[in-house]
Amino acid sequence: MLSPREECSTETNAFMELAIQQAKIALDALEVPVGCVIVEDGKVIASGRNRTTETRNATRHAEMEAIDVLVEQWQKNKLSISEVAGKFSSCSLFVTCEPCIMCASALSILGIKEVYYGCANDKFGGCGSILSLHLGNSMNSEVTPRSGFKCTGGIMASEAVLLLQTFYEQGNPNAPKPHRPLTRQP
Image (cartoon, rainbow, N blue to C red; front, side, top):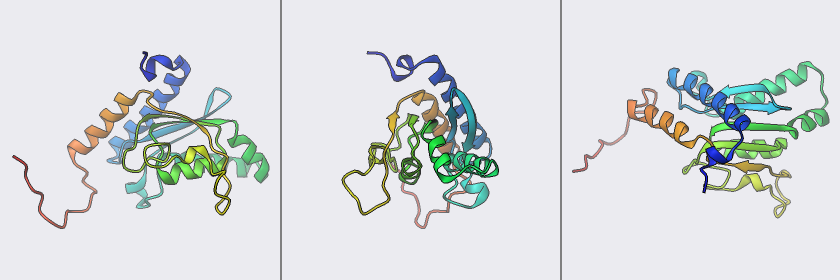
């Protein structure tokens, strides 16, 4: 059986490499190293990286940063709401770590066509690790309707994990100090 990286096209790996580059920029800025690119018709139209520390805003994940770039651009071009929805439905997102619940929900509501991600997000993942928001919500009509999106994980996962390990091994200088002393294990 081939690894996800070997099964993916050269183009998929090239876009994921661009997302990895964004994650490296985040790492250099002492942010959790997650990066993404949004692609339409084979061209990168937006990129983003985590900026939660820099902005002091917990919602500034890589995906939200890239979405905001597009929304602003499309508003300047005076696209209607339905035109913006149509544009998102033809876009693919490549992100180094599985979108969290917040980001997966936003991507579903926006109607993104597909998401490719590197490593799983075992604590907050919204594309199967914790919740499966990429599947939409056809069974629950009381929340905002979401159509869902195609999701493929494991692309260049080892590279994404290595960046996260580097970040956490060096220690997060922006993390709050623990309220209780750390216990040492033998």
